[in-house]
Length: 279
Image (cartoon, rainbow, N blue to C red):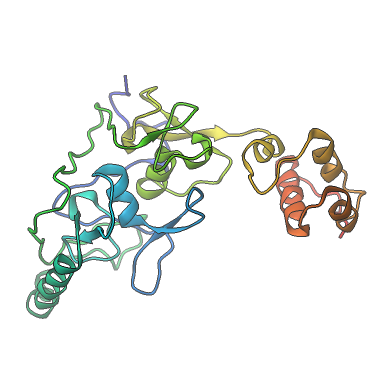
């Protein structure tokens, strides 16, 4: 069972889920944004950046097919509140643009916003909410502290989590719960371990997610999960030997120099001291 109070004192303020509601947008200040305001995350399984609003739809509302588009009822490209997202196409997108353009022209003075204050999460009030019917019949059902959230349309991982598409990646790397944490709670380091207070690894409720620690051995984690190469223990020991020059390792292991430097940087971060990496 999840804790009765997920906002308990033992959870730091910056690691708490602040909730979403139908009336207000949800803008995560920690996410990178393009010039049009859309936030995005790096999705390893797709090897590219994916829009935060598209991920929110796929994870919390339903799958996108063909020419489906993830659209904003609020007209706020910075928002990924699942209450404000629906699935449509070019025609719906055009109608949205007209509606929100007119709203900006006539209702701007009435729009309350907290964009001026510093906050992890901004919650501006939308000018107008579109009522267009979604192509996906399912609606976002909301998050509550004492009930798990499951997305049965997502694919299972071999290690007991959920993911967006069938891949051989581990849930520790591409699990849907990690994306939910990054979308709604805060950023993750790749070595962070995301735990479930409800003990249900298929749950995507951000009230139940928290960083439980880090993988103690960055080297072992990289060896298991870095698909750029698969190194033997002997190869990893060679990389850890700072007396060996990078050029020598490139020749012996057949790796790109940047790959070796990345592994060594992780080793130095893990040990907390540098011994002089030879280039």
